Image 1: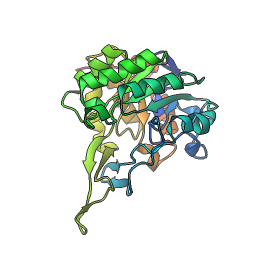
Image 2: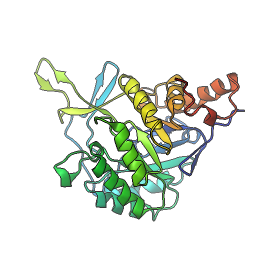
Image 3: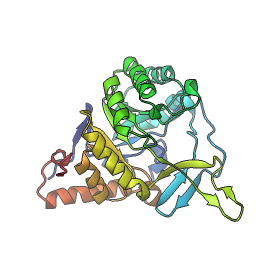
Image 4: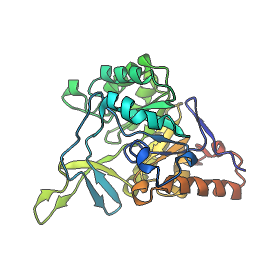
Length: 303
């Protein structure tokens, strides 16, 4: 039997396949649709210090090779998460990574400290694709200094593994990755969605209520794959690959490019059992190819 287990930043995952933030809610939504104990873990929908109602609808539109979403980080807030969502998540037989976002670096640190009081969280994923309210609304992840400040604040507030989630909407993602590594990130997730929009030509108006949204799905896979490979050459911390992973072949490409783990997102909207099916085929692939441990494939790309 192939050993699919991966140790990522001190967290033991039974296999390298996780469900991506924002695509599986807080776990309960997927319970009747898939066996969460068969995947390596799940990443919670982003939580913020205070509850958020999210953006005005429409919030989702299908694209030829994926989807645009503009949910607006709708969530119950920190205390709502602790009281309403965490009791269920804590009982799952898989690793749970909690994704957080705030409008200031200090706010991220305060959230990390609060979550450190809970028992059972595997790691924190820091959504630095959120706007920095002290910098005119520019995304933290678009500025190396701002990104570093967020990760340092979180690092100082918790002993939990810290995973920085990077936006691809930057000139040089390698520079951002190196900065968050230096600031204390234990791992890096990449990529978040690409900025996009859709237009209703009959009305000559944007389809999304927020005008623009985040593009995900197969369309962004080549971009994500290249960014994972570039970052893997420049940092020492482990990577989680995200972006258009619809099949085991997609997952393998990310792993070979340098990702120790992968996150499945848009695929779950098409097939809620996609994560489990990717694990099953991954196990068969390794057995057929004489691969004893999935770790041996990580970063095995020959150029």
